[in-house]
Image 1 (cartoon, each protein chain N blue to C red):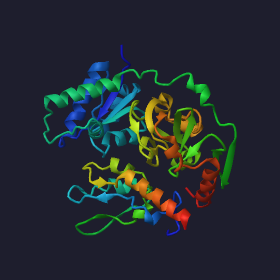
Image 2 (cartoon, helix red, strand yellow):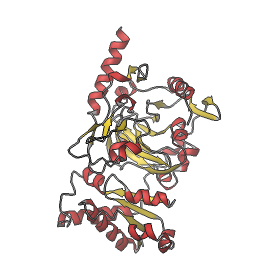
Image 3 (cartoon, rainbow over the protein chains, first blue to last red):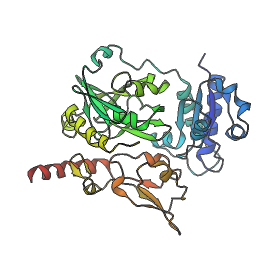
Image 4 (cartoon, chains in turn green, purple):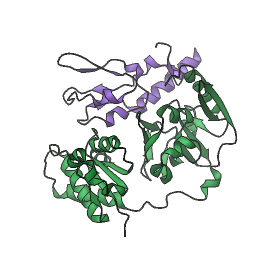
Amino acid sequence: MAERFSVLPCNGLDKAVGPLAREIALAVVEACQGELVCPVLFHNLPARYAQALELPLIVIDGCGTRCATKLAAEHNIRVTRKLQVAEALKLAGESAGESLTPDAPRLARCRQLAERLVSVPEERTARDSEAAFAEPAEYATVTQDKFIFRIPRQGYLFNENHCWARVVGSRARVGISDYMQQELGDLTFCELPQVGAEIGQFDAVGSVESVKAVSDIISPVSGRVVAVNPAVAEKPEIINEDPYGRGWVAELELADLKSDRALLLDGEAYLALVRQKAAGYHP
Amino acid sequence: MSDETFMGVPREKIPWYPTIDYSKCDFCMECDKFCPHQVYERREGEVMLIVANPTNCVVFCRACAKTCGPDALAFPNKQGIIELIKRLREEGSDG
């Protein structure tokens, strides 16, 4: 029996993506015997769904306006999984079209997206790599007022978007730096990339969301995603607690480290950059 | 600020910033509400939003585009920008 979820979908009935979000929500509820949360009624009468929302929540946004996500955030409800229909279709090389009545191929795609949402995440972490990607041995620190930013002295490469790569053999783990996690504040959501996705250097390899802002995780290295860290999707605060260790986001099979390396900073160079940023740091 | 650099290159030499397609934009202002770097500015009149501070935009960040319902925001080709940065870095180290 699949895990049960409650589902909060987009209610955009005037755009083609809205009815698709609805179809996906219905398919999710059917697949996991879950509970449907009507965004309109929830907005007016949140107590009506108090019981349903004891289940882990799946949010389905139609478009980039992300009404359903914002509604969940307004009510301080943790989102366990989410989908943005327009983005998911774009990834598949498709579009929502113009019609407010979904056609058969789109309905089939909706069912497939719903199945993916409720499926049990595979054991995607290579267990034997845990030891290889051990925690940093030594940190340098930059102190500014009450803030202390840590930077591993060795073994990590950084880009100027405050993301790191830790290379071991032909693979690298990527994540965000201590500076970035403090700048964002308490993280409420981490979006992971798809396993198998080909990521170019400086492409987004996921995103992190806090009460303050959403930020892309810009990959320092190019390669194919071979594993993601399900722990940070469940508990994004792990990234706040341990950004260079347990807070890793994805593991990539490297495509061209030699070329990527030319555009990256080592620990010492990144330390200098953080020193410079921190001097003007008044969040 | 004119002395800002990104990857060792003066920021103003890197043309990374959003372009608004005004045939699609419905001036919902979600991108402006979202962007913490004041890239956008609101205006009175028919065109109610412009890209006022392009060099405030974080190079390689496209996060505002995800907030855009009508898909009206475009960014330059990333590979082209990487090539440009590499070239400017080489020129910088030569001179």
